[in-house]
Every structure is written in structure tokens, then in C-alpha cells.
Amino acid sequence: MDSYSCSASSAYVVVVQTPINWFSAPWIWKKYTDEVFNVGLHDQTFLTGDGRTRKDPTKPYGSGGLMAPRKALVCTTWNAPREAFDEPSNPTLQGRSLADILSNITCTFRFCGFEVLPEFGIFDIFKNPNVEADLAAYRDHLEKHLG
Image (cartoon, rainbow, N blue to C red; front, side):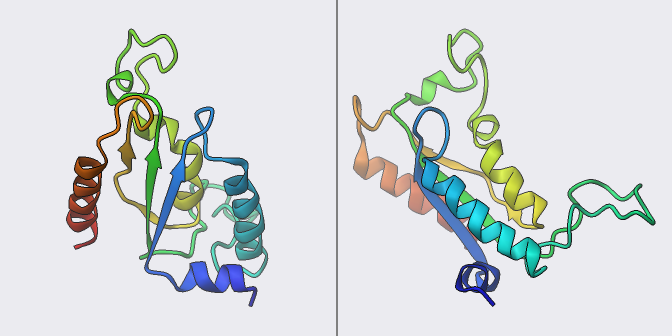
């Protein structure tokens, strides 16, 4: 088994800690997912396709994941302030939530059968950092969702 899929498939919780650049994870995340998740598809350790089959195309798309009961948690750092999210008058995000913006990451995990835990964001890291409070909130978030 490839070392990528071995390490990810044996983990109980996968934590993705990433900065957000241009409203997405950096390119290295895409490279990682292409390499690791494609191996997991090829050797059928992560999933067995999209869930549907030619014999039964009524199965739900995205139901072929094998990673349950594993969990995934996405933690991100942002230049954007927290107030920019969920705010319809924001000219860029236009009411989108943190979960909306991170769906390109979380859908990949759900597709493979992971339970996606509530995301965590650290905001305004350049213009108004609050490192101590953010770290305390992150510890609380981990404790709440991972025990």
C-alpha cells in the first residue's frame, strides 16, 4: 500500500490546517488530494467509486466511501475578518459562510465517507491578530469535537 493512503486510512481523525489564499487552500493541497485520494480510489482503501453501480444507478452519488467512522476537521487561517462571513452586504463573500467557502475541501472527505466535523477559522491574522485568544478557542473547539 502506498504510504500516503496507509497514513490517511489508518488515522481516526484527519486535521487539515491550512492558510486560505485567494479563497481556497494553497495549490499544494490540490496536489496532495490528487495524489492521495486517487491512490485511495485506485486501491479501494478510501472508496469504491461514487456509490452508484451499473446494476443499481439509484444508489446516492457519493455513497461509495469506505472511511467511516473516521472524521475530518478543517482549520483555516484568514486575512479576512470574521464579520465578512455570513454577511449579505459583503461585496466579495455575499453572505457565504465559512462552511460554504470550504466545501471544496469538505466534500472530498464526505465523498470518501468521512464525518466532517464543524470547521474552525482564525480570522484577521494580519491586520488584527489575536493569537492567544485564537489558540484558546482552537483548543476549546478540538476538545468539544474530539473529546
